[in-house]
Image (tube, rainbow, N blue to C red; front, side, top):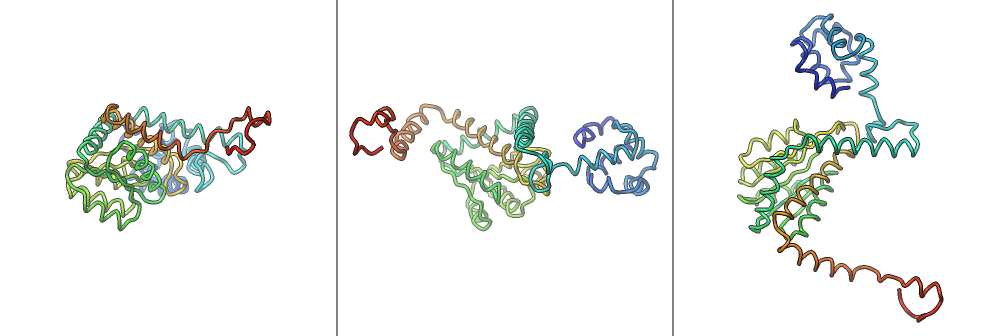
Length: 305
C-alpha cells in the first residue's frame, strides 16, 4: 500500500502530494489522527485529505485508515513482516520464502549497474595492486562483513572484516588511496559506521556502502569523490523487525562483487590457487566409508572409516 502511494505521488495535485508525504513520514501516526489535525499538518483543507484518499483508490478517509492500520501493523513485531501469530509451518514456509524471493527480484530489477561495475573495478584494482580491502559492519551487518572477508580472501587479496568500533576507527585511519572500505549497514544510521565512512573518505580511500539509499550513511558516502553507494532498498522496517530480507540482499551483493572481482582477476591467476585450496581441504574431511564392504561384513574388521 505505501509503496503504491509513493509511486503515485508525481501524478497527484500539489496539495494531495503534501498529504501523501505526511502519510509516508509517519504511517502509524497518520492512521490515528483526526482529519482536522491531518489537514493542519499537511497545510491543506479537510476535503483535500478526503480527496487524496479517493485519488489513491479508497472510498474515503475511514476506509483508507482501516486499510492503512492493517498495513502498518502487519506481521509479528520484531520477528518478520509477513507472518501472523497463528501461522503454521506451511504458512511460514510460503510467506518467508515468497517475501525473500520478491525482495531479491525487486533488487534485480532496480539495481544500479554502473555503481556495481565501478565497485567491482575498484575492488579488483585494489586486489591486483596488493592494496587493502576492509569490510565493516556491526551487529548483524558484522556477520555479513565476515562473509565478505571469507569469500574475498580466497581470491588472494589482502582483506579483513572489522566489527569492533574502536578497531574500525584505527583500521579506517590506516587506509589510503587505492584502498577500499566496504561498509554494510541495514539502517545506515550506526554512529560507528558513519565515523568509519568519514575517516576513510578523508584518507582518500574508495568508500562503498551497502545500505538503504535514503540513509545517513548513503549521504555520507556521496560526499566523497571516490564514494560508491550500492543501494539495498527493501520494505523491511529496521526499527520493528529482525533484519532478514536485508541480510539476504547484502549477502547476495557480496556474491555479486566476489564473482565480478574473480572474473576481473582472471582464471590464470585464480584457478591454480583455488585448486590447491580444495586439495588441501580434503585432508580435513573424514574418509568415505566403503558401505558395500561394511554391509557384507567382509574385509578388514580393524579398518578405520
